[in-house]
Image (cartoon, one colour):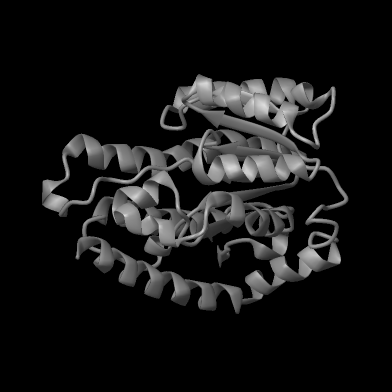
Amino acid sequence: MKNQYFIVHQITNTSSCKKTSRCGKSGMTAALNAVMNGGLTGGGAVAAQKTVLITGVSRGLGKALAVEIAKRGHSVIGCSRSQEKLDSLQSELCSGPSSSSSSSEKHLFLNADVCSNSGVQELARVVMEKKGVPDIIVNNAGTINKNNRLWEVPEEEFNAVIDTNLKGIANMLRHFIPLMIEKKQGILVNMSSGWGRSAAAQVAPYCASKWAVEGLTKSVAKELPAGMAIVALNPGVINTEMLQSCFGSSSGMYQAPDSWAPKAADMILNLTVADNGASLSV
């Protein structure tokens, strides 16, 4: 019954979010740009090569998005706390059908914890030294609490959700926005959730963190100079390890990250300053 409760709420609320955001001006702008810029032709490829930084790149949505964006010829910078998984992803991109002898230099994968302000500061330093300012940053790293009523969620578990999902994004913005301001351009994508625009029992810490991401995004949007944009992006309901922790075996009803990635890449690669402050859904 618990899993069914989650499914009903998530399907209902995510569907509502999609209707709201995709019918809005910003959602239409991203879709129109995808067509105008050739983002939906030739297998989703776009003409101009971009450098995209993705946090939480070693698994789930982050990994699928990195593979998809690299497949389209763009340069990927990724970070994660798992060096083993970073090495595996690097090898995958270098041995894929679209790889070349320069693939190992084209992409950059770094061991970093977004929860650490000093760690993100060092990440920014290395990225600048090796790749320069990213064109797009996708703040994807995230975690969720085990299904439980709020008063039964241990303090350290609650803190881990807030530290990763909210403070992790704040750390990234703190150290990368000034670099983008100097360049006078940049797109920032903060991964939100259907539960950042609705609510469900048993996942109060996660809901709180994603509602905060939505508010943070809209506030920062008002602070950015011309030439930049920041959006909150609800990826939808995807069969990831996080979903499995909530839904159990029922998570198999939903699409896999690899199926989701092409649609997400189309949207992310074609965001413009006109989308600043928007709450979008894939």
